Image 1: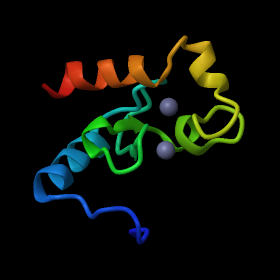
Image 2: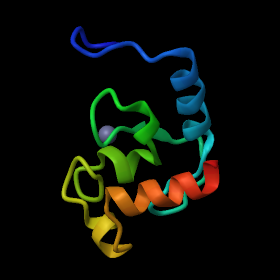
Image 3: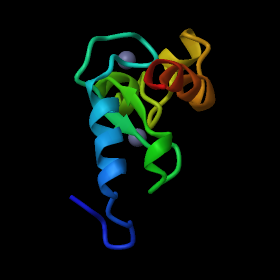
Image 4: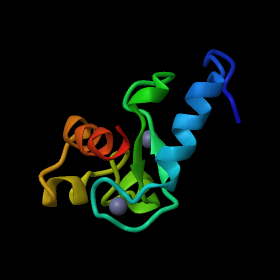
Length: 88
Ligand SMILES: [Zn+2]
Ligand SMILES: [Zn+2]
């Protein structure tokens, strides 16, 4: 499912993504497996674990109206910080 202009992840990046996907949602704490959201396309080490609703939900998701993000007072950098706190 790679788009053409997006470089394929390296082995280390793939391993990181797998770890991210095994984590709970960084916004609502729904238990994993989660989806990996990239704040910047192709920067895999910035990936954030999100449940489908906080990721792609039209109402709650980061790609939608971000209602859950607003409710939890989260943005991508806060979520990334929480993610790295648990990964490192
Ligand atoms: Zn969530
Ligand atoms: Zn995303």
